[in-house]
Image 1 (tube, rainbow, N blue to C red):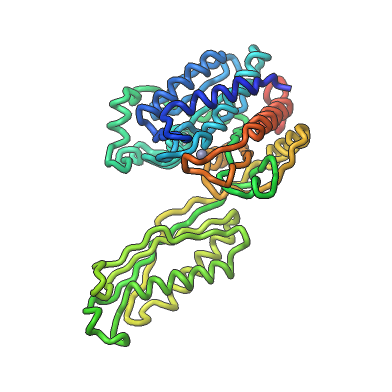
Image 2 (image 1 turned 30 degrees about the vertical axis):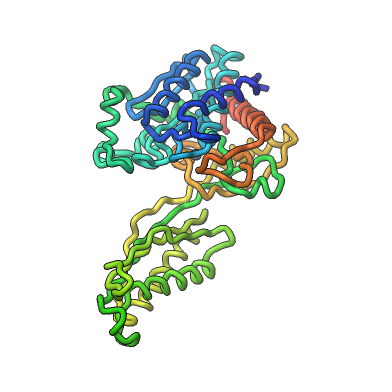
Length: 414
Ligand SMILES: [Zn+2]
């Protein structure tokens, strides 16, 4: 068993939570001073653990096991949403640090090492999953230039200000990185409500977004008879209600959808709206189900187009394919949970994670620990310390099983 030190890991989690501390949570948006200070600290902890540790040109902190010709890569992210929780991302990074540190101490000259990483800007302050996408070579230079935060600050200008721009880029090396494992808090209520210790992620859902547009005619809202109106807002609200019913009909019990952005023009109480827009987002683990949901939306659009004098059109403004986790690594998490006498459940992840990006390139898997009250993306987010400790033991055991499968030269099958 990898000789992890639970107390040391818990202390590191609490130390990390002091950077950008905000009440019971943290405010550590990507590339803010607090985020960079946390990353500098992490780099130092990785170096103390004997890893070749550096911060790359985008802020990703990478600790590479020296002398190893193959490795298991462990990680998550240390940036947060505004007024975020202390464990979202941080938990996975400290589990990675502790496991890499313990393996390195016990096997300093092993040919197969454990690398640890904290990707930059997972939360999308400038660009969602920026670090993991850049690591995998999925971000073109042209994508970086327009990236700005909510305040309008340019990513490239901020990187230059931090003197990161000239640095090397941390990059995935599929010959070295044989697998990626990530631990995370669940960020939802399922484990805590059912008293289950560990969630083993089978896949990360895909997301599709459509902007649906309605064009009618502006008229006086007092004098125009109801039957003569070409009311874009009425058409939009009816469409949203109807499309939800159709999603329910073609989706699964796990499918979710949302209408997160709505706009009505000209936006006056006494004017019949001539323009309305709603952004519809829907998610499922199965590409076929997502396709069915899209077809349902487009069918409804064709049926309603022109009705009541309102033209309806839609364009897709986002699509992320679902990512399946590696079955061999899922089995290791299950065996590790059994070894720790922890109850576990296979489940999908409704939220995006860095493992989704890595999982397209190399075998990847994720495990969850319970979130108290299912709360996340808020300073109230928390996990019972006993659950954190149990989660670390399960995680380290799964990493050890992965290393065993790879064998002393790293060329074994997972
Ligand atoms: Zn996260």
